[in-house]
Image (cartoon, rainbow, N blue to C red; front, top):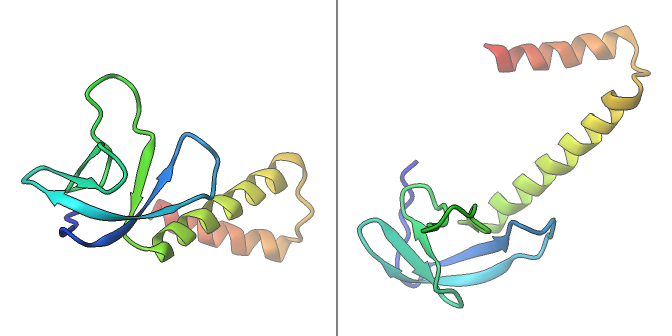
Length: 111
């Protein structure tokens, strides 16, 4: 994935260690050959995949989104995934036709 971030570009950041929907608008302040930085943070992010650079063994705690739509799509996916896990984890009261339609969708993933 090759993302083109530019100095002055508005992007969005979220603290991924919390199950928070709080997202902050920030500006790209510096772009190098490998990393870029944002306003309000001294952290560096890889240009090619937008992941936070960490020099130790800690996992990244900040996540970058190029648009609010990207963030909203991810949150919607998480909500749907949670609902499906809860639904299928406890009971399944779907009729055969509904089950066949779900199977067809699941089979698409295997292709």
